[in-house]
Image (cartoon, rainbow over all chains, first blue to last red; front, side, top):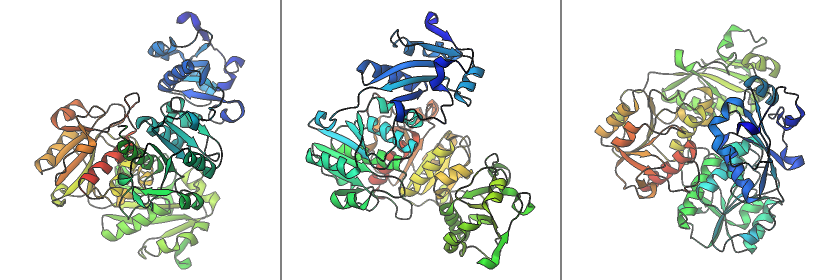
Length: 272
Length: 272
């Protein structure tokens, strides 16, 4: 391992330019590139690199983290450069104190084509509409992975789940759960309905108790943004479900509500 | 309303000293005082003020927010001063850009004495051990309120849920759900067990599927910190439950896990 480490002595080194000031930047839009942060996400990225959906382009580490993640680094192709820096240099590169000390630059390969076509006959999917908060986007993927959802669909107004913070909150699940992000909410749901999915929107005023959703072979759970919820055009057209709860309170936060609803639907489908 | 507004022209005004640099300060420890932020939390504080558990000492508002929350302000006792400031002054007081523009100084009245003694014969309570993350503490209260838990117990190593960010994340539920924060985890659980509570610790390796917990009149759900989980001394002594989920993943985050487990136990107890 030691032989492949490339020391970086200056924050201006052009070889690590993509890691500069990462808090202010979002690489995802322009270049299909993204920053993976922390050893857990790096491990997921190395695994995803094998499957061909994502690639690791380079790694940048705090020197004293190298030994701790040696097992993960062994899974990297030889062609991937691994840069190391001391804390002072690393902090100057990224623009803040990066206590985790593990970064990688990833690349999204060709987008999933016809994800719906490739879903199994029995499947549970999660759909997010207008999910602009990175924490919520990340939590949705983490919950989808935990409860064995087959895919996540995001409408075009949702944020890119590969954004650094969303990816971190997802504990890397954005790299393991197949997803697609395109079209309006209504487009996405219509495509799913045409493909045999029972569509269940989640809303505090939903008609069916989430514990009483009849299991079907293909089910989609649809969640909206906190506050505004799902647009009326979506709520009117499909079945709606609610999580029973105290009437005195604001609804649950979107991450927790999604987790509970997926837990209930995954239970109904006997996936867990 | 206009007649009771007190204009603040300078960030150095001693009358609003408690709101200065609130991001760096934690009033909860020393003085039983706390900062309530945002209109929803202010509304809960005004309600709690009526019940006598908490008091509102003063309010500080961005001038252009006054009209929007007039209905909430009407519930304030006449003795509570309401300060208003323009955005520039307010930002200088608090030390950052406060886009919500609604702050209040609250005071915790005498701590709950013998909270356990006052719980109803049928009750569901939530116990947090070592919950040091303010977001997680806040989420626990929000979930407890949503699923009608009767009380929250925190061990002495957990953070104070009145801390500004925890209170905000709880959407004010810290002010409505009775709670106690003292003693070691083992002390708290032993007291609950002596009082007839079935104790269920939550752990990824718990023995009983959370969907199969037998309902009893008194139930306590116990959650630990993310990462380390509950201490072995606690896990060994009580029944344990798990949320069924994919084995490939890190466990759910503590907020979501708590929400799901409370949902399941509240369902079993027929509270929802």
